[in-house]
Structures are given as structure tokens and as C-alpha cells.
Length: 292
Image (cartoon, rainbow, N blue to C red; front, side):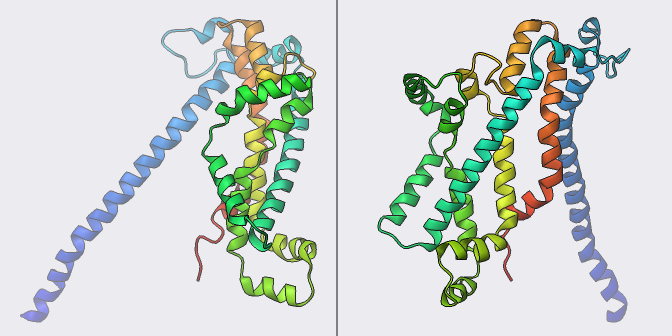
């Protein structure tokens, strides 16, 4: 009698667990679909709007596919504004800022992790506090200083105020502190000086986090808008986000086709970089999260 009822009792206990597992899976997929829809639907409308004729953009009800699909909006972007100059400026500004921020972030994080000097904890606390201050608060004071130096409409006027690296220092320091201390001590016992320790030991073990930091910096600086907009009034120094504003002013608030085409062209370079490096970014951000 007991042997006959045991499987039924076990099945009865397993049934609620199975139902909870199925319900959790369904809710997880539903949340994933909602998230994907929230992200992709606006991007989809940007793409199809860039391929629509001007009257087709305002058709009611909304059309989900351009009829007909045209490429004139993209040619308008290349002729109405100096798009290639904006692209060149964005590449130059982003490259300079990435080099500056990665270099400063790695060196400052290394100093805070492995070097001993008075006030090291206070310096780190100041860097942490800088993360709590929104960039918009410093815009007025920075603008007054840069204008006084005569740096408006110059690359240094855009690059120097944006070269602060509090986030990178925080990220790289936390990673450096998670490295095996035995390896660091062994390198020091073998006579490795500070620079040799950094380039021969620390950085080779930190490539995933360094790539993640670099990619985050590339995306942030490529999309930077407010400060370059305040500093640039012509195509000689304006990056692509500012160029899109000038394109919108040229086309007016009703002709969204060229503006959406310009948005797509602005997104493509950084999207390609992100797709290529995303695995390294995820690996770098989760580095040290699981130990065992």
C-alpha cells in the first residue's frame, strides 16, 4: 500500500514546482518581448521614415512600410550639410577623448590600487564624489572658462573639459583590486618596477575590462551632444550630433525624412563597433563577479 502511494505523493509535490517553473519562464519571455519591442519599434520607425517620401510620413493611419521606398533622403543629408566634415570631426574628437580617458583611467586606477602615497583614500573618495555630480552642473563654469581662454570653435575647447575620467578610474581600480595578489607580489619579488608591473602583469590580465571601458567611452563620446553644441557653431569643429541639429534647422520641423536618414548614418559606425566588441564588454563588466 505504501509503495503504491509514494509515486503519487511525489508527483503531487512536483506539480506546483513545475507550474511555477513554467509560469516563471512565460513571464520571463513576456518581459523580454516587451523590452525588445520598446527598443526596436522606435528604431524601426526611424529606419522606415528615412525611406519615406515627405507626404507618406504623415499618412493616417500610420503605414508600417514605405510605399514607395526611396533613397533620396540619404542623398539630401550628404548635400544639404557637410556630413563628411561632421563625420571627420566626430572621429577625431572621439579618438582623442578615448585615448585621453583610457590612459588617465588606467594610470590613476593603477596608482590608487598598487602605489602607496599619503592621502590615497581621500583622492579616491574625491573621485567617487565626482561621479555623483551631474555634468550639467559644471556646464556654466566650464563654458565661462573656455570662452575666456578663446577656445570656442576649437577642438581643444571640446576635448579638454570632457577628458575627466572618474568612472573609468572607479571601474579599473575595482578590477585591479580583484586581481590575484600572489601574482602581483611574485612580480615585485622578481624585480618588476611600477611600469613593468603595469604593462607586463596587470594589463595582460585586464584586457576584458579595459575593452569594456574603452567601448563605453567610445559610445558616450560619440553621442555627446550638449557640450559640443555649446562649443561649436560651424562645420569646422562640430561633430555629428550637432550636425543633425543643423540639418533639422535646414529642413524644418516638418521634413523628418532627411533627419531620420542622418540619424541612421550617425548610428551606423558606433553600432558596428558595439556589435564587434559587445562580447568583450560583457565579459569585462562581469569580470571578478564570480570566484571559485
